[in-house]
Length: 136
Length: 256
Image 1 (tube, each protein chain N blue to C red):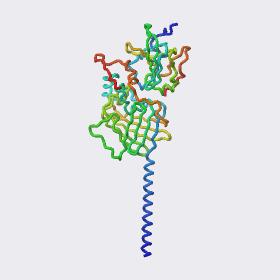
Image 2: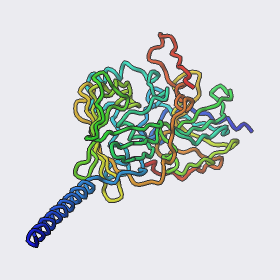
Image 3: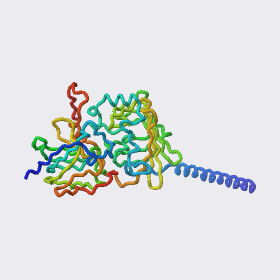
Image 4: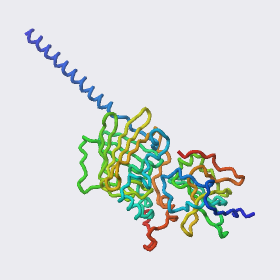
């Protein structure tokens, strides 16, 4: 079974727009606001650290090449994600998850912005990894 | 002889009364002065906007109408890659208050120390009347020169003599501050809470004062303080796109 097949780019629609509720940190010019990507892969690293927690996901790019994707929560700090239910053990290496977010604009690097709202990664059975809620 | 003794006793009694009255008056003055000094020492949570739990009130937005044309031109010219924060240059004040880190206040006789949970910053507020020398005309400071006094139950602080800072008003949106930046802070207590009123002026980059009021609650320690480390600070740089692709690629010094 190829776990990395689900790689989809589609135009942002109302259903997938990520609310920029955390406008404190500028990500403008880094990520493509007009595109939302769905990416399924295997967790390589979960760094629940300040100043900004990040997730490294091993997943295929559009050409079927396995890449390490930097999944960013933008300007959120540990305290913000903790309020949404994240913990240091929310993800473990080997977990298979699906994320939605804006891809990085720069060519040759692989990043996705997860920032905002209650758009949380989901596990294989489709359940969100956290209950969600306000960051504030 | 007896009359003299009687006179002396009366004089001593009156003198004693005078001393007593003086002591009472003096202690009242001391009590009054002490009552004027709020208890600020302790650990405080990062501030939330007064009246709500959000931090939006203290963010100078990217397109904030308070910004001068000069500020907008600067924003347009400078790129994110050149920002000092990627070298662990600390967040400026008052932008520092927007970050979600606790802080600590320590009141000493001649100064108040502010320990910020972000970037390992300790700021000194020199209390007036203790003879601290004022800076020389050519002295400027990253966190400015802060002078404070107790007034009506609050610590009132004026800070100026800031160095020009390319991220001095907002480190996320490339909004600088000039040597004309002035910061006015008023720390007071409302029950258990600490209330901080902040007003910032900078005639070069702000059309009007940038003001906000935040409220902090007591906490037991500095919590998840982050003292900055280069790998973490520079992590997102690989995603940044230079505004000046024809320039030689900027290499950063590894200060470690």
